[in-house]
Length: 228
Image 1 (cartoon, rainbow, N blue to C red):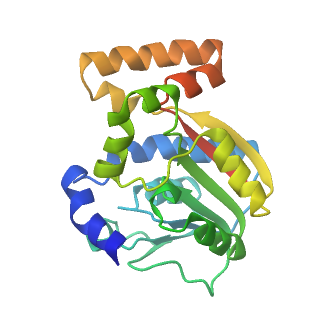
Image 2: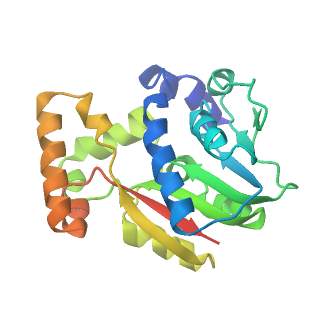
Image 3: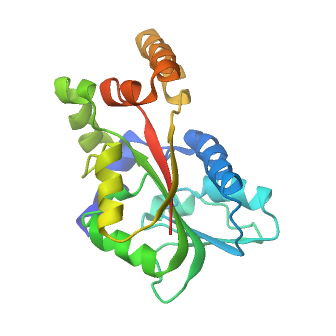
């Protein structure tokens, strides 16, 4: 109940557009991992779908598939497009009696109070799982304490991950990790100050030379994971 109140008030105050501007970037990365692993599916569910924009892009790409979105925030749910024929949205938690070929959780796990329980539930109700996890833990974020505090206060991150921690947790819960790769949404930084734009460029240059170095030292990256 407390988490729902947070997303109806504090989260909305800091994020009135519910990160709609980042949806196309996430869609492209999700499409990439589906294509790379030749995933076949008839139905696709997103848990914590926000305003539902990722599902809009996916439904237009895979027109003969059925898509379902679950979102606890009334405000985010009200922003979703209910006119699409192959997309159905629900303003409630995941229906555990239904099963899906793929469940997507894009920037969701770090928000839930009990991530182990949450992961067990989506594993029971799906064949494949696609998880997009912000990698908040880095040398940069530990030295600059304001980075993690901002993530907690403005976007409600209850848990902080790096690549090793999230992969460890998934394996501990008997997920089979099929594939994973880093993602970097530079659009976030192009909308920022000149200093943020400069740092984004530095991140990309170092990432080109050594991916793990850029991720572990500078931060600002996420991990897209396919499990089953």
